[in-house]
Structures are given as structure tokens and as C-alpha cells.
Length: 501
Image (cartoon, rainbow, N blue to C red):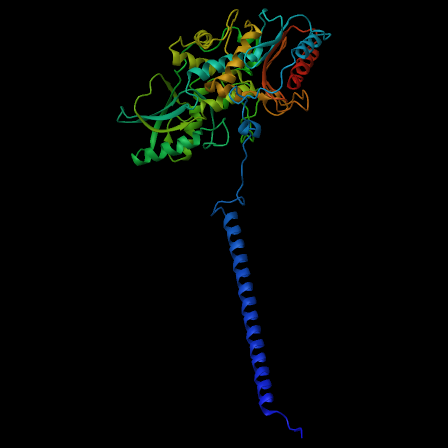
């Protein structure tokens, strides 16, 4: 007979299983809750760290992209900072150059109505092979393309990584009165405030020099000085003869001096947002070195040093004593880039004079010309029929063959020591004096040039990166065109088509 009583052993097992399941469920839930709290806590900590780091970044306590501080930006175009010029070593052969197309471009150029007959041009491959030329044996006035010759000579003679110092020298020979002397070494781009690391013009600041000089004086328990300045670096013969014909009101050229603020421009409004910008044509102060000394005196007074003759510092021919402080210009390679990019006549003459001094040539404009031409000869540049009235191309009377310009461009591409010349060229459509010359949208960024412009001259010399690979060099000079605007457009059309040859 089947029993109807429940199975007590089975019931006990079932109860234990149920209790175990409930215990396991509670344990699982506790673990899930703990895990959620740990995740939440970790997320909270991460959020606090992120916000904290962001706040420290904003406060400039740690490096990072965020900041609350006022920032300043360099006026040097990105293409100049990062762009690498073409070199023969990196030059890809590309497709064969169609010499017939080059000849056709030259024929079209020559047939331009209003161009006139006084023009010369040459187009070469980077290895020197001539693709086309016209009137290449005729010497023409080159205008500012002359600066490429000065740049090539200076870059091959001078240490382009060096800088031009401006120094404060303490002359303690007089026990009754401390005399401080401001001594310059050719920096004509001094700033009135502190050193500006973002720009070439103003890289060395008289404010910084004054602060460091004041500290040195205070350490010596000197609180009162008289101030003098030395401006004997370039002697007495400083201005190329005849330059005034193209230097209306003195706005296009400042003779080289031992030191000057902003190239001695008068009336520039401070602070200057873009101190490296070109085409700033203002009259010049009468005594640039003396004006720089007066600025230095003012900064010294602000730093707690009494300058008895702050308004009229004395000029001296000697600066002997202990150097208390010095400031440094931009590197010569940077100054050269600025000179070429902005077509700066004053800096071009400065480079000529520095080259002459380095070579022991006469300390004069004629000595600078001699230094440039003799150096070009040593470099293998054809200087036949070359006449340099100055080192910038501003003075009337200069003339050369386009082959001389092309030689310099070709040499610059092959010689690493001349890299500052190539890097300093304006990039058509992007930088410098060629920024506004919208030759061809396809050619923008592919053409580096030195422009040349006078009332009766339009010229270009430079290199072109071909879209199919390889580099071409060219030089075009037009004198006395019947229509200046037409001549300039014809030059642009010719050069702007070379990248697709």
C-alpha cells in the first residue's frame, strides 16, 4: 500500500537548496552593488583628475594646450617656418622636360603687346642645362633680384648660425663717476621692450638689456651712471653714391649702423603686432645709434638706475671695460630670410658690409660690392658684365646678365651652405613680396622667387617645383616696358606655367 505521508528527507533537501539559493542570490547582489560603487568611485576619481589637470593647464602650472594667459603669435608665415626648399640631393627626376613647350612659353612671352624689347630671360633645369633663353647676353638693371647675389656671397662667408650682440660695457676708469657704454655689432632690429623670441625684428630687446645691466650695477652698489654709445663699426662711408635717386624721403633705405631700433623707422606705433611685416616705409631718425641709446637709458631708469644724461647720451669712439650684459639678435640665417622675403634694402647693405669686414675688404659701400663680386667669382658664378652700384639693387646703375641670377639660383640648390638663400625666397601666393602675386592657383606654393620692382624694372628670379617631379630655375628681367602692368603680368604668366612643363 502506497504511503500518503510526505518524504521528510526529500523535503529537508529541498529546503536546504532553497536556503542556499537565497544566500547565493544575496551574495551576488552584494557583489554587484560593491562593483557598481567601485565603478562609480573610479569614474568620480577620473573626472576629478581630468578637471584638476584641466584647471592646472589653464593656470599654466602644467604643460598643455589650454591657457588663460594672453598669447602672442609669430608673424612668420607657416610656409616659411616649416617649408623645406627643394635641393638637388632630394630632387626627383620626374618626367622628361618638354623643351618645346618651354620654347613656346618664351615665344608667347616675347609676343606680349606692351612688353617692349628690353627684356632678358633664361629657364634651366636644376643641373644647369638650358631649356630656353632670350637676349641672355644683354645686361639689364635687375632691381631687387640683386639681393640674391649679396645673399649668396654672405651665406658662403659668414657663420649663418651666429648672432649680432649689443652690449652694456662698464668703464670704471673714472672713480668719481661710473660710465656705461652701449656697444653695438650691427643689430639694426633692436626692440624697445624685452627680448621677443617669436620675431626677428625685436628678438633682442633693450628692456632685457637694461634689466640685466641694472642687476649687475646694483650688485656693484652702483645706482648712478652717465651713458655713452659707440657707433664706429661701419666707419664714415656708409651710403652708396646715388641711392637717393630711388630713396624718396629716405624711406627705402637706412645706412648701416652699429645699432638701431626697428631699423630706425620713425613714427611706428608701439606695440607692433607684426614687427616682421614688410612694406613699412617710414622716414628714419637722424641718429639711429643715439636714439637706441636714449631708449636704453629710459629702460635703465625704469630699472632703478639714475642716468644723468638720459636724454642725450654721449657718443664715443671707444668702449673698453667690463661687459655687464648683452643681448643677441636673431641668427643671421633668420635675418637673411627676413631681408629676402621683405626685399629689405637696408639689411641687404648690412650683409654686404658684414661680408666685407669678414674678408678684410674696405669698410665702405664699394668694399661691400667688391666682397660680394669676388666671392661670387670664387663660387663659380658668371660675373661677366656684372655692375653693382650697391648690394640691394636700389641704386641706379646696376646691371647684370640673367645668367648670373640663374647661376646663383642653381648654386643655392646644390650647396647646403646657401640654404638660407633658398629658404628666404618668397613663396608665390603665400609669403613675402610675392604673396599677392596670384600667378596660378595650381602653382601656389611651388614657386619660390625674389622679386624686383622699380619704376622702369620688373624682374623675377627663383625656382619652380615641377608637378611631375624635378626643379627648374629661371630669371626674367624686363627694363623700360611700354606698359609696366602688362609686363608684370607677362612675367607672372610665364613663370606660373613652368610647374606643368
